[in-house]
Image (cartoon, one colour):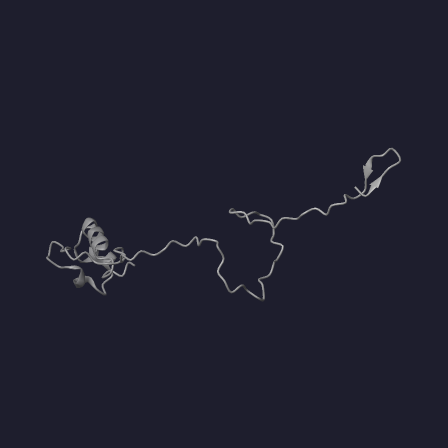
Length: 114
């Protein structure tokens, strides 16, 4: 301490300058506003060590938007027969609601549902 009062008690500022450690960012966001509200005009060249939250795409193609090659309706028609046709309206040409549902599940690509 740099000063003592008349009783000999330490007062004032300590003789040693406190060490300020660099802060470590938290993993979870806070509601506090950032100290730097605008992006840096001089971004870093090297990537950060922070992991991306975006999932890595798989090497396996998605099967969600493909026609089932084994599908054939009660008339023997495959998905390709329905290309360019609004499959939801197949009930107006004699298909039951169940057949329309099966068609739309099996023929997503031909029915343009994805």
